[in-house]
Length: 51
Image (cartoon, rainbow, N blue to C red):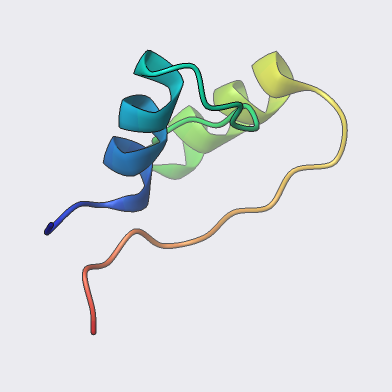
């Protein structure tokens, strides 16, 4: 399969596999809002298809 991580997480969640909360952001403001909604410490990482 050729999926981004967020797509795989959505697929897992749809089938009852536990996943940690997350969000996709396209800019710094979206990332800030997502971090506030998630709460607690967060990690920002790029979504790129490699390998």
